[in-house]
Length: 164
Length: 322
Image (cartoon, rainbow over all chains, first blue to last red; front, side, top):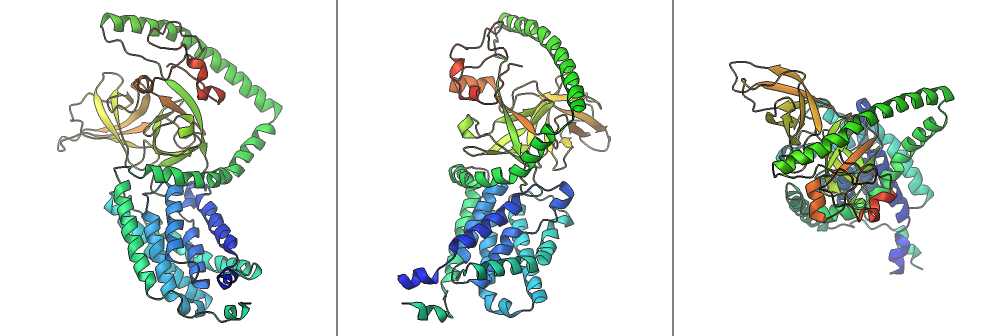
């Protein structure tokens, strides 16, 4: 019991990082910039899945997705499902991704976010709402570019607050 | 203490259970999506969760609200004066129009009584503010700072000063999400103001375009025609402007005319919206409605006596009976 508490440390940091990601996700941008917005919640989720797979996993991804659904006015369960899948893959691959150099990590993130977008598109297609443009896939690219930033900031936070 | 065991990180922490967990969650979310889609069974969950999200929305809106406030406080005396003059002029004009409205309304009621089809023309109105929050791309939705606490309800119509804007699709306690009439999933029953021709205006997903499908090429509709709400769907009260017809293409090889229209409401610029309680809804929940002046002269259909105890009065509420 005590060892469990001692091992789990800095839950507030994880929570706040998710809250901050949600804020960035909701922040109003001008129309042209909106489609460039990286998928912040997914990025933060991927980071914690890789860094602390024993704490952040499928369940956290699902919950974050559910909150995102409510914040976004999306179909309830849409992002929950896709982020759970993203978390699952990140967990499965975490030992490999950890060892990758930064650019390779970014490419893995690109693939994960593309998968996330594709799943969302499928769900939207299934319920009959798809006004499709190429701009839809831009978040995958910008997320890839934002990954080093997210990685460095969250690693700094993790070390500073000894999140375990 | 248990320090020692911390330093050795366990290698196989998840075991096989994460796959099971994923499968369970995927099934759960699929179930939720099918319940949420069309049937709105999960509005309770959504509204509870929106209580968590509301502080975030509020926080995100803060910089925008602050910049507006700064802009207002530091605008120059000259701008204020010109604006003031413009507003005064406008108010005089509107007042003049309203003078006529009172007598027209009375006349209308009299005529309706003659026709034995007395219906109430008054509606309650509350002003809501838009929160500067971005929602899903590809959808046309907005977040407003009024919710079930302010007696808003699911499906409630929203207007701005120029026309119909949309309706509430997700209701939270203090904020709600509304779908604009330009959303690709939205349809609003309309009629041509000039001749009463009924039609449906479908959203296209584009910010300033509505489609009017299923009108035969012989239909009497022209560019520049004003489309107003017909009230047939039961959601929007009748008689509010919706859109102006911008293009009518009558191709004899096609079964229907291709008609597009532009919404009259300032869907992309509006900061405030009017939440409207249509009269039949007021009847249902038995809320007393009231006049702009608080009096109920010349409005025989309204049941105003208890109007003072409405929660909306404390707010930025303005009640009117257009």
